[in-house]
Image (cartoon, rainbow, N blue to C red):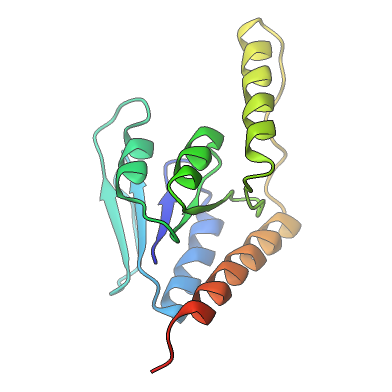
Length: 154
């Protein structure tokens, strides 16, 4: 089980939540980005820098992710791809992507992309607030607890 972070756009505060949880649970965590990243000194947290380019970091994650892993991303197409491989996905606001809703989310993303390309100003998401940070932390803890319950007892 590994936590993968689509780190180019992941807020620092969310990375810090991930770092604390990874250390607490000794969960291997890999941050993938096309720029240098700072990570705390750790035996379980690493950063992978990929070349610049469209979807290079996403493709790296898709290539390496395995069933049961968790991917932290706000990129809906990436979430759909890793879910197709049996991984789970959560966005930095704490929304857990599900097989039931991912198609709807992709359709809405495509619709908004079409609106923006036609000149409509759609604005971005609101700033990350305390509620979203807590929702993310709860979702991450829920994933880690499920994984811990699946480990064989020694």
